[in-house]
Image 1 (cartoon, rainbow, N blue to C red):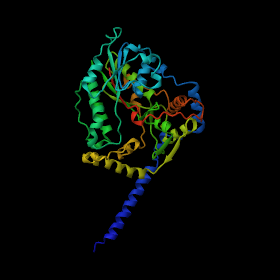
Image 2 (cartoon, rainbow, N blue to C red):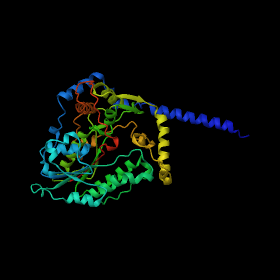
Image 3 (tube, one colour):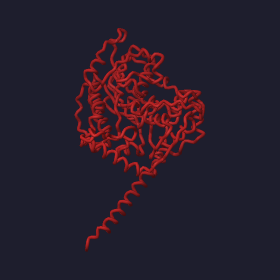
Image 4 (cartoon, rainbow, N blue to C red):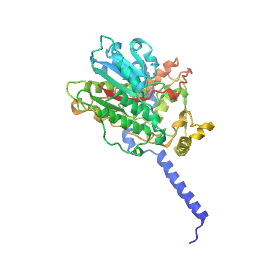
Length: 443
């Protein structure tokens, strides 16, 4: 049989087209079992009703917090989303400001920490990738009224680069997420084998696995530790990476509008931290010690479209949502990743003025399709009682309530709390300055 290159090329094109067709169909369809987790979409009526309710009766987390403990606190990453929520929760339950220290590279700038007791909390500028800087922050003398109290450390600092999976970029994530965790938690005796790097969707996930083992492995009778795994994306501030970009920029280009995922309010994550601390600080070593536990919002997971609809209905600023083909974006993501790898392998090109893409497109790499998929989170283990190895955790708010509360706060920052207001005073803070969240506890 004579080889015909034209026929071979035609067959190759046909097979590739069939593959891309099936791939696109898989990316745009919804698995049947997802409907059991999310029976229906948010309705316009319940969005408006929930928004009005949280405006008139804000969600009260304070009554769900465990009692005040006679301890002092270091909150690493305390200027950010979850870290800041922890600081505010500690103050709300009666901890004196003198017993709390924020260890972070940046001072608190969120509006709810710029007045009241939070302004009296000690802040130490720290580079957690530098052991000397961490040692200085931890060894700084405490006020005499708390100096002799036992110490709890909440480690909530991380860098999130979910698009990078090549080991050429490993150091970008490792320095903060691994080295930073080790510097904060210096009893590093956990040596269980990890899965190979290639089995994780990105360097971020690999770094999380290493850091988690560092924290859990340090657990000992006199040095109790645990890990909170937020499930999945954390929202709650204008600078978060879930709701914040849409509210700030007023434009969304998305290929996952149909995707259903669990989200978790920063306040719920903070509550889980304090419940974990209460369990670890008890007289007996609890079953949760040295363990990672997942927490998420109460209620069913939403579809991304649910949030877009809510923002369009009740946000003071407009929201323009453009849905694009996931297949086209997936192919483009390989181009972005390939270009970044080329520059890393041939650094001479950077001296010619060539550089990686900047802004949101920098994260458009194939790895983000994993966290961008349908992900259902089960936090049943954390909901068990402490006696059963859990935390007794129960999410205080649903995602609908939490997101409506975030939109309410956004509207207030724009000078308008009403539905579909006309204020347009938008904070253009860069997404690169977003709150970056991890969750470790040492008590």
